[in-house]
Image (cartoon, rainbow, N blue to C red; front, side, top):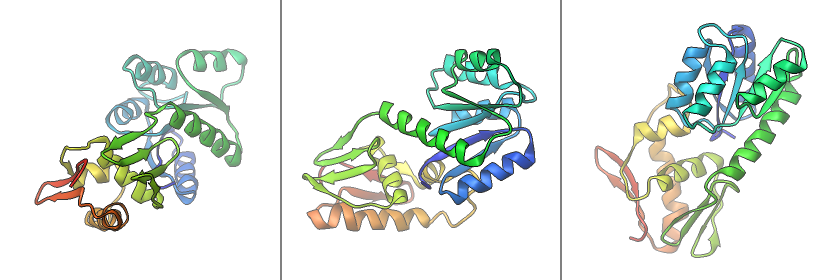
Length: 227
């Protein structure tokens, strides 16, 4: 699930780092924020597939962060965490726009099961398919077909292709691909993008006699309908 990017907003640093470690071990890309203001900023600036949001946060509490994201039109699924008890806390969390609610202390398997459920619902609500010529990319089902033929891609290959497909006809820079497909903490060689683009060309273009994934030298990559 390395193509699934999650934001964890939690001011208890030990818990936040534990969640990051566990989720990354499960294949997610994870960014951390330790106060509500930073969480709100990151959630607006980056394309997360889910947000794990504590309620008791400095700067802005989770209720305010959630309500503001919904006011701004951000529809990313939100799983709220709280140490508070009582049904009114759950009601307030859901009324401000959270999709699910989990009380502390919680078990990690329960959190990941709730997160998977949110991701399934979020995927179902996204754009059903992206069609670029005879190439069909289905973000909800994580599948790709060309001329009716299924193409087997790794999770990361699919994420890179989806990024290009969502901007079909436009030049997408290497930096933009890294930002959307890898997490903010990625410190590796940015040329990793070239490795995945080359793999996509071998799988998506070459077998079909196409050259639809082009390089714009010094700028980035562009996916076109037919070439």
